Length: 595
Image (cartoon, rainbow, N blue to C red; front, side, top):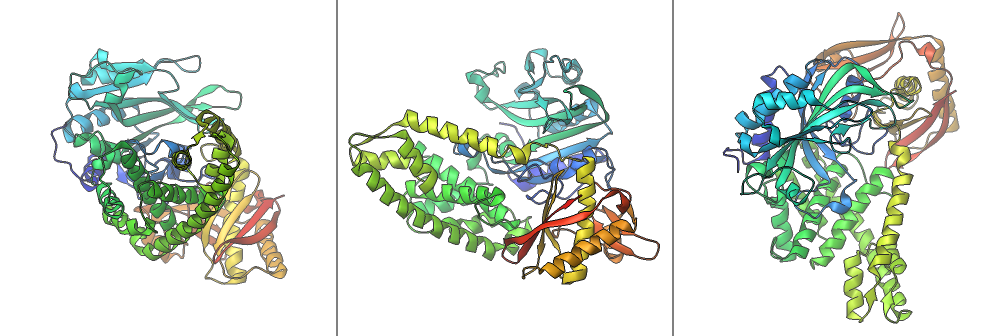
């Protein structure tokens, strides 16, 4: 265990931010879990997502050195949650160099923070570097920097692109080698870091990514004009390591929720593996759900709403396995809010969070009852073994986990074909990955000419909506691909054909006027003074980028935004609305294109 006094997330976050501020980094605010600049992902999965335009070369208002803590959601490991260290929601500490310092300073900063500020003994550290392949050479440069700092050669390991390379997020874009830092959690003498059994004794706590290449459409890796550093340190995992825990759920960022689950389930965490796993899943999924709802998402059957629905229902299923009676998800909300006092959106939206959890839990309990009827029907037709296909039907359509089906089958002296179930599940996961490929295919925020034009068009669209419908209208979300705009805004009534025609005309008239699009950097106070609109009630940094679409006499649109944008509306083409529909209660959605 490291000899330090860091016990809470607040202490760790402050120490990290203060350290990088001392290295001339500017602190930037965390962003919403709903990405505003990257249509290729459902949620913000890392601190770099809100910085996409700046990683691609746009100047950041606060300069080239940045630091922050970012709330994140990762859904790829939902089925892995239940062990000691996988999470759906987590906080990521990060520092960035946007074309400023590179490998030498980045690695030095990491080493100094780990050994001096967190007081981790050098003897308990190991690092990995990129081994090299046909696309890029072995990263001897990073390895030498580590050696010069005091990491012995037998603690530096070279791994393939699978382990020590980041990106591109899609088929093309910024990418490069990374170097990962590991901490020895076992009490014995540290062994070599391998992919064998002892890898579980080495816990990854930090990752420095060096974006030094850009992959083009032909598959070539070209040297990047702007070389960036992007780093990530998970708060939950680091806090566990620093306090000598081999279970993240024993730290203060989980214990209030775990204790509440113990209270309502009358079970003890850690007493047996099945109950412990169920409690972790419940704690993780409800924490993630609370944060997702607080950022404006509600349960549904598509995209973010579907992920939220799956999390809530999975938590309810595991609540049943630990014999919790009645609705319980809403009872965990205050424990989450208690852990995170620095996120005011949780307290502000507490009633909405509780309402959505209760409604979804009630809906799911009705589904479970239907599932029991289906189970009884299946067992009447079964003599000895419930097929894997039927077990998967119960899982997919009615939310029965395999364990629950096995338990019910055992009561009737039946067995379940587990191998066939796993085959069906694997097939479904492959279909899910294929179906979601359209969301992720573009990768790191597609800043192509087409999406740049459409992004600027959303500013004209919002201005036209406010002109036609009233100044109450504000943006509530957008998703832009190279083909179309999907724009959400607050308005209670369906728009009439006449209103849609008028909005279309205003946008096209402003395109024909050949209006200039100007970018300025200013403080938030100055931006508000000049009448700039902000999006999603975001917290802003000391300086912001303000985009103004204007002629010589007045402005059509003035918004705080991170781009990308054209320089004149004459570049846009003809605007056409394809569809107007409801997105959620009080929220309308317009789908539109440029012809």
